[in-house]
Image (cartoon, rainbow, N blue to C red; front, side, top):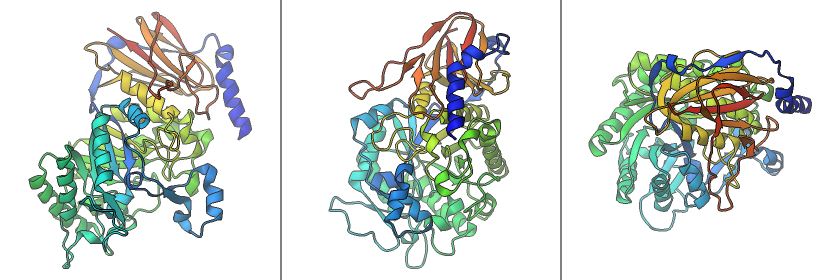
Length: 502
C-alpha cells in the first residue's frame, strides 16, 4: 500500500514534468453546449444524523476501533459503534462552515429517528423512553436543529418514528408524535419543508418497525400518515420511500424490495421520489472497496447504476415525479479511512456532476460532521478535502445543467451556468490520470485549481495555496486565477473549475 501511495504522490508532483508534449488535449466549446435541464437551487445538501442530535451509538473512528473493541463485550455490528455526545449546533465554527454550503437542505433522520420519542415539554429529560420507543428527543435538542437551519440558510427535511409506540392498543398507527413535532417546530418559528414517513423502509425490520411488518402494512400506514399530514401540515412535502441497497449495489440486509413497498393498495405516492445510495460497505464493516480503485471508471460510474434502478421504480409507480438522493457517501458504515482525504473528492464531485446530468434534483451527503465520511472532522470540525470541494461547487456551479462534450479517458467534464450571474458558465474538469493533460479554452477565464501533494491527504491547495480557515475559524476568500484564451494545464490528479463570464 505504501508503495502505491508513494507512486501516486510522485506522479502527482512530477506529472507536469513527465507529461508528453503531444498529450491529448480536451476542448471546451461554450457555444455548442446544449441545455440539459435544471436542478434544485439546493442541489448540494447534507445530513445530520438524529443520532448526532440526541447522542447515541455511532461508528467508532478507525484509529480507536481496536482499543474500544478490546474493552467491549458487544458483538456483531454493535461492536463497531460507540457512544457519541450530542452535537453542538450552536457552535460558531460549525455554523460558519455549514453556511458556506447554503442555501441547502438539512436532513435530520437516520435509523435512530425510527424509534425516537419526542418529549414535548420543558421538564427534565426522562430517564428512559416510554414503552415502544428506544430514544428521546428533547425540545431543546430539536430547537437546536431549527435554529441551526435558520442560521445556515437550510430547509429542514426529516422523518418520523415507526416503532411500536406509534400505535394504539388495537395496533393502529397514530399521528400523536408527528403532530407534537410539527407543533413544536412551528411554535419556535421553524418549518419542516419535507418529510419521509420513516427512514429506509427497505430495512424496516432492522430499523425498529414492529414485529411482522410488511409491505401491506407500510401501504396502509403510509396512507394514514399522508392523510393526516396533508390536512394538518399541507405545506410539508411528503417524500419517499427512501429505500437503499438495491439494484445489485450492496447485496446485504434488505428487508423489503421496492416492489413490495409500492405495489400494495392503497398504493403509496410521493411528491418527491427519494432513494439512498452507497457504492459499497466500508472497510470497517468488512467491505470490499479498495483505495487503489477509488479513481477507477467503474467506481465513479457506479452511482449511475444505483440511480437507474430507482429511476426505473419511479417510472413504474409514479412517472415524472422529481427524484432526490437523500443519503449518500463514499461507502456505508461510516466510510473508509480515505473518505476523509483528497482522493474521495473526485468521487464526490463526479457523483454530483453525473447525477445533475441525469435529472436528480437534490443530492444529500451523509454526514456534515461525523465519522470518516463527514465533510468536517468530527472532533475539530475542521474542513476535510470534500468540504473544500463542496464549497467550490456551491460558489461556482449554478442550477442550469449543460452537455459539456467528450473528454479523454480518465478526464471528466461537467458544465453548469455560472452561479448567481445572469450570463456565463462554469466548467468543472476532473483529471484522474497519473499524468498531466491540458484543455483548450475559447476565451479568457478564471481558474480554481485543486491539487494535493498526495492522494491520501487531508491537505489540499487552491491555485497552489493550501486551503485553511482564518484565525477566527471563518472561511477564507476564494479567489480565481485569471487565465488567457488558449491552453490551460491540468496537473495529474487535479480538479479544476473554469469560470467564463460571457
